[in-house]
Amino acid sequence: MCVAGFSNNVSLGATVGFVNDLPCELSVAASVGPNGDFAKWLDRDLNIGDEITVKVVLADQVDEPKSLQTKK
Image 1: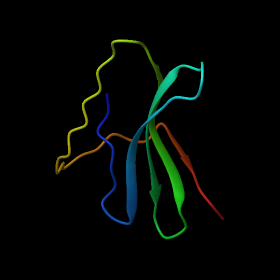
Image 2 (image 1 turned 90 degrees about the vertical axis):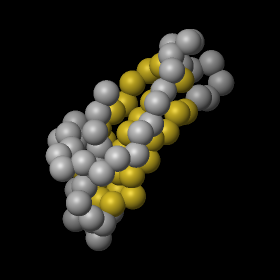
Image 3 (image 1 turned 45 degrees about the vertical axis):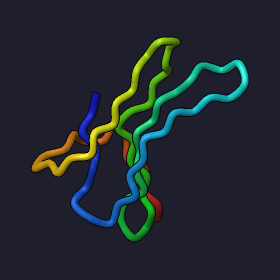
């Protein structure tokens, strides 16, 4: 679904969240740089039976984040 990452100063995570009766959600996001800017590549609902695979790789190119919130 995405290749997420930055070259340095990043804390990257893939999270599956579930709260009570709300749908399960998959999120791929990162805290980036010394200011803690927030980048998000993926945010979607999951359905019963969905399978998730996370693969850790070294990549020459990554996808652009869908959103980037900068702290001032």
